Image (cartoon, rainbow, N blue to C red; front, top):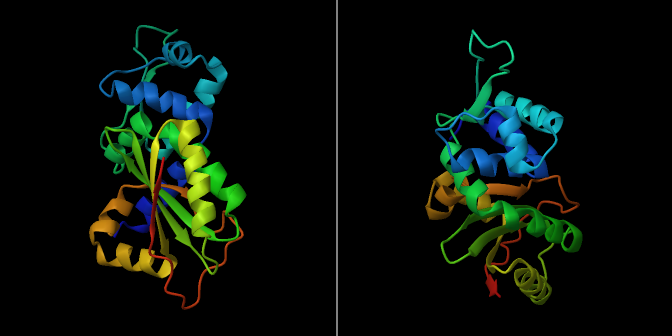
Length: 219
């Protein structure tokens, strides 16, 4: 299990990942992890204002996701560069998400928070394969999402995204057990992107309900 410091770093990073500026910057930086980018190069590549780039980079560096490199001593006009921090504990997972899943994560999050705010307790993007299938894990609380409504919402969203959605719906108790036991699902969760954290919605944790164990998969 990750220690408190690592868990806090992961939560801080996850909370920030949905900002459009962050997504644009990480796509560029993670595409060339060995390259060191000056602010003006990133601003041009992302079509963002230089001040927005500087402000966003400061947070990413503090979170440990990116590394900052000092300016050359003989160049007073050089403000330094940033690059991917390949030693960051979640570097591999974040890079995979940045290059594949950002385009789908925010629309999915918006849909779940608007249509299932009373039942979805947590949600994770487990990954995206080479065939553009996004695997989503939904953790329900006291109320269980209606299967037909969830399927219809996923089908509509899938059509707009141009991606296949494979959605698993489980109880919070089963989710906690998977994390604790480090089984197959627990291992997937260790590298997943949490798009809805407990407390983000009005869903209340379940008491003893076993939960819905179905699998929804729609285009």
